[in-house]
Amino acid sequence: MPQCLVKGCEGKTFKDQGLCSRCWVMLSQGSIMPSTAWFAVELEFMNQQNHHAMEQVRLLHDKVNDLMGEEK
Image (cartoon, rainbow, N blue to C red; front, side, top):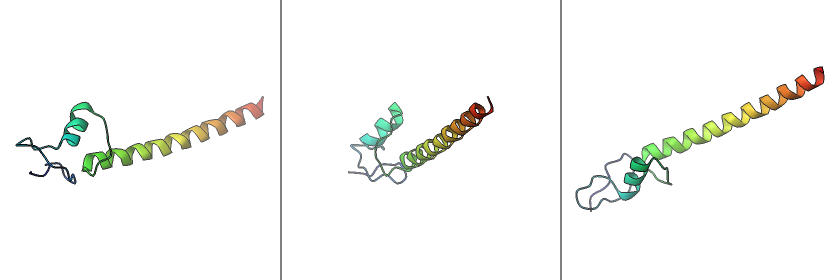
């Protein structure tokens, strides 16, 4: 069986499809699954960065609210 065309993916394709079933599902449905495909790895990394950034924003927002409460 031929290998998936997606960079970094180790999946095998069926017939002459070009993409493995996992990459096909992720690309066609927009859902991310554990994979070695470059786009899945990059999206997971970006999701982790966004989560961390949003946590920092939440902490700063809480601090501002605390400081605003002390002024009253």
